[in-house]
Length: 332
Image (cartoon, rainbow, N blue to C red; front, top):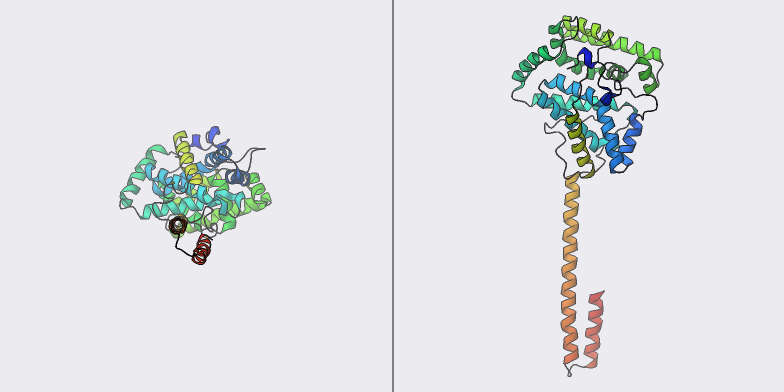
């Protein structure tokens, strides 16, 4: 969980937080390298994206699903979706927002489809109490807040949702957010303040007064709602995603829970519809088989005709000429 020690995440995974350092390639450049580079460059770029945004994605999945196994499945499904849909993302500068929405929808659908939902929530609360201890804050307030926080963040208008995701879920500074979104720093600060007010009022309407106060205190202190990723999870996610990237027919299902994807961010799959491609391949194979069969029949008839002409002395020259013309037409 996002303890104090994990607010500044492992530098090997997040480069002192998800924000890019000076000279590091941005998301737009990494996506271009992933889509257009060779196999090695593509994998390196994708790994960089997983390391950069994975802590935020895992935070969303674990906060919604609670169970580690379910959260890891949703995490991998999110990046499998990215490997398939990367070419259709409209604004590649704010990939974090796209990933957040995909991760949230996948996690929500997985939770809704689970027959063990209530038991998982109880177990998740117990797990949280032992693994997450924000300093000098009410633990019960955090437990109450987590399941609804992402629901309300996802409902925010885009101009408030984007800075919340980049600042509070990925840990970028106001200056970094302003540079990325091409906003004045004052605008970022103002919209973050307005977003906190909106989240607090919405939590109050849900009857979560304690959580609303806790949220504003936590966000004001710069709490980052992210997770530390184990290296093994990064490796397995990259391997599965690259396999789906280069061999879509061999890749696993993107989302076993059947979740939808962001309608404003995704158009047709970059790699096409696998079922349609398979059907076209079968039709093409059938047509080629019929052509080969027709050619074999023509050659067989032609061979018989040629043999007959060569061996029958009684066949008139005119008949032989007509048969030869017919043979010529059949061959063409």
